[in-house]
Length: 114
Image (cartoon, rainbow, N blue to C red; front, side):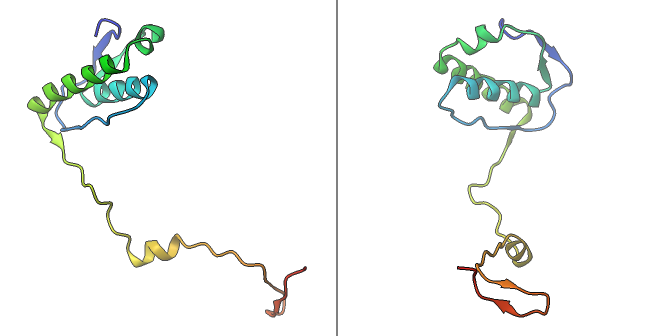
């Protein structure tokens, strides 16, 4: 953590979210910063090149190690693998209809213009 100068803004109290496995250094670095913020720490000014030039495996190992230590202190947020089911109202609200017909001012259906 020498690259990121950390400032503690709060004591970690809430459970932390398990980190995702990511395929690029930028997303992995952002995941590290997210986990730090969730733990009550905020990075102060830092050299972005030094962080983003690290090997992806180094960043992911750091994230996993930090998560394991935080999990012992505050627990882990359990994540459901299945999304919550849509209610009927939500399903209807999310429907969109596309048509080639139009309705005129009198309420009559008009044929397509082609």
